[in-house]
Image (cartoon, rainbow, N blue to C red; front, side, top):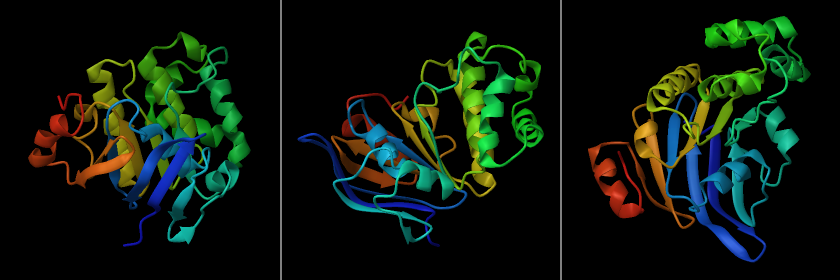
Length: 235
Protein backbone atom coordinates (compact mmCIF):
# COMPACT_ATOMS: atom_id res chain seq x y z
CA UNK A 1 0.00 0.00 0.00
CA UNK A 2 1.39 3.39 -1.03
CA UNK A 3 1.90 5.63 2.02
CA UNK A 4 -0.02 8.90 2.04
CA UNK A 5 3.01 10.60 3.59
CA UNK A 6 6.61 9.54 3.12
CA UNK A 7 9.91 11.13 4.09
CA UNK A 8 12.97 9.59 2.49
CA UNK A 9 16.44 10.22 3.89
CA UNK A 10 15.57 13.78 4.88
CA UNK A 11 18.32 16.06 6.12
CA UNK A 12 17.51 19.49 7.51
CA UNK A 13 19.45 22.27 9.19
CA UNK A 14 19.18 25.65 10.85
CA UNK A 15 22.06 27.64 9.43
CA UNK A 16 25.17 25.50 9.81
CA UNK A 17 23.63 23.24 12.45
CA UNK A 18 22.22 20.02 11.00
CA UNK A 19 19.27 18.71 13.03
CA UNK A 20 17.97 15.86 10.85
CA UNK A 21 20.46 13.29 9.61
CA UNK A 22 18.63 11.18 7.05
CA UNK A 23 15.18 10.68 8.55
CA UNK A 24 12.91 8.19 6.78
CA UNK A 25 9.28 7.74 7.84
CA UNK A 26 6.01 6.74 6.22
CA UNK A 27 2.36 6.97 7.23
CA UNK A 28 -0.44 5.12 5.46
CA UNK A 29 -4.12 6.02 5.27
CA UNK A 30 -5.87 5.19 8.53
CA UNK A 31 -2.59 4.81 10.39
CA UNK A 32 -1.36 6.64 13.50
CA UNK A 33 2.43 6.90 13.66
CA UNK A 34 4.00 8.22 16.87
CA UNK A 35 7.28 10.09 16.57
CA UNK A 36 8.91 9.98 19.98
CA UNK A 37 12.10 11.38 21.45
CA UNK A 38 13.57 13.91 23.86
CA UNK A 39 13.55 17.68 23.46
CA UNK A 40 15.92 18.76 20.71
CA UNK A 41 15.79 15.44 18.88
CA UNK A 42 14.35 17.03 15.72
CA UNK A 43 10.73 15.93 16.05
CA UNK A 44 9.16 19.32 15.36
CA UNK A 45 11.55 19.95 12.48
CA UNK A 46 10.40 16.67 10.95
CA UNK A 47 6.81 17.89 11.04
CA UNK A 48 7.80 21.25 9.59
CA UNK A 49 9.53 19.55 6.67
CA UNK A 50 6.42 17.43 6.10
CA UNK A 51 4.25 20.58 6.13
CA UNK A 52 6.63 22.58 3.95
CA UNK A 53 7.36 25.24 6.57
CA UNK A 54 11.03 24.23 6.77
CA UNK A 55 12.98 23.32 3.66
CA UNK A 56 15.00 20.11 3.70
CA UNK A 57 18.65 20.24 2.71
CA UNK A 58 18.26 16.91 0.93
CA UNK A 59 15.96 13.92 0.75
CA UNK A 60 12.44 13.60 -0.60
CA UNK A 61 8.89 14.32 0.52
CA UNK A 62 6.14 12.28 -1.12
CA UNK A 63 2.36 12.50 -0.81
CA UNK A 64 0.46 9.51 -2.11
CA UNK A 65 3.54 8.57 -4.10
CA UNK A 66 3.78 12.02 -5.71
CA UNK A 67 7.07 13.84 -5.24
CA UNK A 68 6.34 17.11 -3.40
CA UNK A 69 9.91 17.88 -2.40
CA UNK A 70 10.40 21.63 -2.11
CA UNK A 71 6.68 22.44 -2.33
CA UNK A 72 5.53 25.46 -0.36
CA UNK A 73 3.16 25.17 2.61
CA UNK A 74 0.17 26.45 0.64
CA UNK A 75 0.54 23.79 -2.05
CA UNK A 76 0.99 21.07 0.56
CA UNK A 77 -2.10 22.29 2.41
CA UNK A 78 -4.07 22.17 -0.83
CA UNK A 79 -2.78 18.62 -1.33
CA UNK A 80 -4.28 17.67 2.04
CA UNK A 81 -1.55 18.23 4.63
CA UNK A 82 -2.68 19.86 7.88
CA UNK A 83 -0.24 20.85 10.65
CA UNK A 84 -1.51 21.60 14.15
CA UNK A 85 1.54 23.10 15.86
CA UNK A 86 2.58 23.01 19.47
CA UNK A 87 0.71 25.64 21.47
CA UNK A 88 -2.63 25.05 19.73
CA UNK A 89 -2.58 28.27 17.68
CA UNK A 90 -6.15 29.43 18.26
CA UNK A 91 -7.03 33.14 18.35
CA UNK A 92 -7.64 33.75 22.07
CA UNK A 93 -9.55 37.02 21.74
CA UNK A 94 -11.99 35.62 19.19
CA UNK A 95 -14.98 33.48 20.02
CA UNK A 96 -15.07 29.79 19.19
CA UNK A 97 -17.51 30.57 16.39
CA UNK A 98 -15.25 33.25 14.90
CA UNK A 99 -12.23 30.94 15.12
CA UNK A 100 -14.21 28.45 13.06
CA UNK A 101 -15.47 31.16 10.71
CA UNK A 102 -11.90 31.81 9.59
CA UNK A 103 -11.82 28.30 8.10
CA UNK A 104 -14.41 29.19 5.45
CA UNK A 105 -11.43 29.88 3.14
CA UNK A 106 -11.47 26.11 2.58
CA UNK A 107 -14.62 26.57 0.51
CA UNK A 108 -17.00 25.15 3.10
CA UNK A 109 -19.76 27.27 4.54
CA UNK A 110 -19.85 28.42 8.13
CA UNK A 111 -22.73 26.06 8.77
CA UNK A 112 -20.82 23.06 7.37
CA UNK A 113 -17.71 23.84 9.41
CA UNK A 114 -19.68 24.29 12.62
CA UNK A 115 -21.61 21.09 11.98
CA UNK A 116 -18.34 19.12 11.64
CA UNK A 117 -16.76 20.80 14.67
CA UNK A 118 -19.74 20.51 17.00
CA UNK A 119 -20.47 16.91 16.04
CA UNK A 120 -16.89 15.91 16.82
CA UNK A 121 -16.57 18.11 19.93
CA UNK A 122 -20.02 18.86 21.45
CA UNK A 123 -18.46 21.00 24.19
CA UNK A 124 -17.50 23.54 21.53
CA UNK A 125 -21.18 24.08 20.71
CA UNK A 126 -21.74 25.06 24.33
CA UNK A 127 -18.76 27.43 24.13
CA UNK A 128 -19.63 28.83 20.69
CA UNK A 129 -19.84 32.46 21.80
CA UNK A 130 -17.08 32.25 24.41
CA UNK A 131 -13.61 33.72 23.83
CA UNK A 132 -11.27 30.87 22.93
CA UNK A 133 -8.62 32.12 25.34
CA UNK A 134 -10.98 31.77 28.28
CA UNK A 135 -11.51 28.03 27.70
CA UNK A 136 -9.49 25.26 29.30
CA UNK A 137 -6.37 24.00 27.59
CA UNK A 138 -8.12 20.82 26.54
CA UNK A 139 -11.02 22.74 25.01
CA UNK A 140 -8.60 24.97 23.12
CA UNK A 141 -6.89 21.87 21.76
CA UNK A 142 -10.28 20.55 20.65
CA UNK A 143 -10.86 23.83 18.83
CA UNK A 144 -7.47 23.55 17.14
CA UNK A 145 -8.33 20.04 16.00
CA UNK A 146 -11.75 21.17 14.79
CA UNK A 147 -10.17 23.95 12.75
CA UNK A 148 -7.77 21.46 11.21
CA UNK A 149 -10.53 19.01 10.35
CA UNK A 150 -12.36 21.80 8.51
CA UNK A 151 -9.69 21.46 5.81
CA UNK A 152 -10.71 17.82 5.25
CA UNK A 153 -7.07 16.68 5.56
CA UNK A 154 -5.58 13.55 4.09
CA UNK A 155 -2.55 13.90 6.36
CA UNK A 156 -2.78 15.29 9.91
CA UNK A 157 0.42 16.39 11.66
CA UNK A 158 0.13 16.91 15.43
CA UNK A 159 2.86 18.48 17.54
CA UNK A 160 2.83 17.75 21.30
CA UNK A 161 -0.94 17.39 21.65
CA UNK A 162 -0.48 16.63 25.35
CA UNK A 163 1.47 19.80 26.17
CA UNK A 164 0.26 21.26 29.47
CA UNK A 165 -2.83 19.08 29.71
CA UNK A 166 -4.01 16.66 32.40
CA UNK A 167 -3.58 12.95 31.54
CA UNK A 168 -7.34 12.32 31.47
CA UNK A 169 -7.86 15.15 28.97
CA UNK A 170 -4.97 13.87 26.86
CA UNK A 171 -6.47 10.37 26.79
CA UNK A 172 -9.79 11.76 25.54
CA UNK A 173 -8.09 13.83 22.85
CA UNK A 174 -6.15 10.84 21.59
CA UNK A 175 -9.35 8.82 21.45
CA UNK A 176 -10.59 11.47 19.03
CA UNK A 177 -7.34 11.24 17.06
CA UNK A 178 -7.81 7.47 16.75
CA UNK A 179 -11.33 8.03 15.42
CA UNK A 180 -10.03 10.56 12.88
CA UNK A 181 -7.50 8.00 11.64
CA UNK A 182 -10.23 5.38 11.30
CA UNK A 183 -11.84 7.66 8.72
CA UNK A 184 -8.80 7.16 6.48
CA UNK A 185 -6.61 10.07 7.57
CA UNK A 186 -2.86 9.46 7.89
CA UNK A 187 -1.80 10.83 11.30
CA UNK A 188 1.77 11.62 12.36
CA UNK A 189 1.97 12.58 16.04
CA UNK A 190 5.02 14.09 17.71
CA UNK A 191 5.22 13.35 21.44
CA UNK A 192 7.95 13.56 24.04
CA UNK A 193 6.07 11.31 26.46
CA UNK A 194 5.45 7.88 25.00
CA UNK A 195 2.63 6.84 27.32
CA UNK A 196 0.43 9.65 26.00
CA UNK A 197 0.17 8.21 22.49
CA UNK A 198 1.35 4.60 22.33
CA UNK A 199 -2.06 3.30 23.33
CA UNK A 200 -3.54 4.40 19.98
CA UNK A 201 -0.46 4.25 17.74
CA UNK A 202 -0.11 1.62 15.01
CA UNK A 203 3.59 2.31 14.56
CA UNK A 204 6.23 4.22 16.51
CA UNK A 205 9.60 5.73 15.69
CA UNK A 206 12.14 7.04 18.19
CA UNK A 207 14.18 10.03 17.07
CA UNK A 208 17.46 10.67 18.88
CA UNK A 209 19.78 13.51 17.86
CA UNK A 210 18.19 13.74 14.45
CA UNK A 211 18.27 10.05 13.61
CA UNK A 212 15.58 7.37 13.79
CA UNK A 213 17.16 4.93 16.22
CA UNK A 214 14.26 2.49 16.48
CA UNK A 215 10.89 2.00 14.83
CA UNK A 216 8.25 -0.67 14.72
CA UNK A 217 5.04 -1.76 16.36
CA UNK A 218 4.45 -0.11 19.77
CA UNK A 219 4.85 -3.40 21.59
CA UNK A 220 6.34 -4.23 24.96
CA UNK A 221 9.80 -4.60 23.45
CA UNK A 222 9.81 -1.06 22.09
CA UNK A 223 8.40 0.31 25.32
CA UNK A 224 11.14 -1.44 27.28
CA UNK A 225 13.81 0.07 25.04
CA UNK A 226 12.58 3.65 25.24
CA UNK A 227 14.45 4.66 28.37
CA UNK A 228 17.67 3.29 26.90
CA UNK A 229 17.14 5.07 23.57
CA UNK A 230 16.75 8.52 25.10
CA UNK A 231 16.92 10.18 28.48
CA UNK A 232 13.26 10.29 29.38
CA UNK A 233 10.45 8.12 30.55
CA UNK A 234 8.18 5.67 28.79
CA UNK A 235 5.58 5.95 31.54
